[in-house]
Amino acid sequence: MVGEVARDRLTLHEVHRFPNQPTRVLGTLHWNVLSLYQGVLDGLGAAAAHTRGSGLTSVGIDTWAVDYGLLAADGTLLANPVHYRDTRTTGTAERAAAALPPPALYAATGLQHLPFNTIYQLMAAQGTPALAAAHRLLLIPDLIAYWLTGEAGTELTNASTTQLIDPRTRDWARPVAKALGIDLTLFPPLRRPGDPAGTLRQDVLAETGLTAPTPVTAVGSHDTASAVVGVPATTPDFAYIATGTWSLAGLELDAPVLTEASRAANFTNELGVDGTVRYLRNIMGLWMLQECVRSWDARGGLASRTDLTALLREAAEATPLRSVVDAGDPAFIAPHDMPDRIADACRRTGQPVPRTPAETTRCVLDSLALAHRRAIEDAQRLSGRTVGVVHIVGGGARNELLCRLTADACGLPVVAGPAEAAALGNVLVQARTAGSVSGGLAELRTLLHSTQPLRQYEPTGDHSAWDRAAARLGDAQVTGQATGAATGQGHEEEPCA
Image (cartoon, rainbow, N blue to C red; front, side):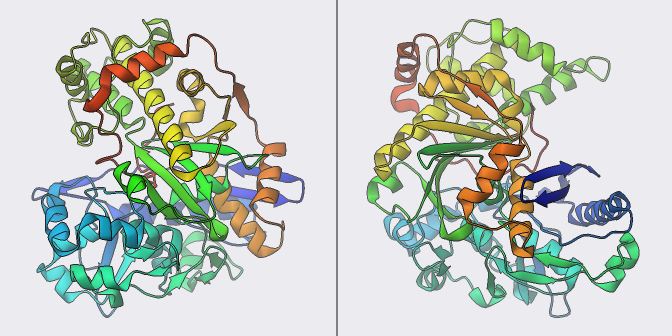
């Protein structure tokens, strides 16, 4: 994405898109990180062509969270990064709890329990040749930046998802690392959004066609951190839902909430731009619908691809709240056979089993709206804040049915857009660093609000119907117990709109 920013103008141009397809090798699910890096180089080449020789002011990188690459002393990658959906972390949370009880871990880091947090990945990797040989550990956006510039750093917003950062000091939680046997010297120094992150190497300039020295600027490199910068709020009493593969629903706070009640509700305190805290719960998101579509397409073959527009239209006409499932149930994390798992969840809770793709889609979207409602209600209760409006940003902002259902479920107005909030937040931090715009988050959001297309949904219908749907799930809900971010985990797969 190439952004053009001035005091009263903010535009994005998509110049290149490339696939992100994980690969399973010898039973382990990996990111194809070299293919991703080539996509970045191709994108920079497309950006050079788009600017027609005028060059780029800077480059900023954001990705999903928690995953990393290990480097040898000479800077070479020791192994392909493992995908957070891989099962290698099974059992590591129990080992961690034996060394550091969950209440103490939460009090120190404020991070939601997720089975694939970086601490559990590192504990699972203990004793492996790659970790034993590692000289550096770089989170995915920092790895891309290192290959582009030759300079290593650890950007703070993404580092906060490792469960190794103290959200009060915004520095490493050294007692946690010591208790879990994690070597913090593997991480290069911390960077904050707006800090310099090097300059594109000469070989990168030659390959991409860029000519002028081009700085790389640290941004909110966890894509949800950039997406929250991209929330076009005009008042402070807002909640946000960053939607895509995951839904990240919560509030922007000035300080973390580290109470036992917050831990029990499985809320996370991730760090944001300008000293903020992203107090949120991770919800399964449109991953559930993506996987349903993938299953239906596989069953129908190449000649029968799902028409998503028609499917959403039919879902809008389906019986509302006929069946709902808990969007935090760990049964929905893994890929494949999602319609069958949704049917099983309905059976277990004594609800009608969806019979058609439209009914399954309506079940997914009703369930996500219900999870959005619960997260926003819990965030208000736990933080003492009051919400007057909900902003939906990211790919899900294009899903009219999901936005309308979320407004109805929450009983609050929903402002949808921008869909490219993460890219816009990334660009705005770069532009402020370069002096193209000035001010704090409020000023950046004012520019967003005045330049981006937005749509507002007012709550309608019988709000008590949502109360009854929530009651049907009752104690079966485990919302947030084993789902994940960017972050977000962001948007590592193409979101269903």
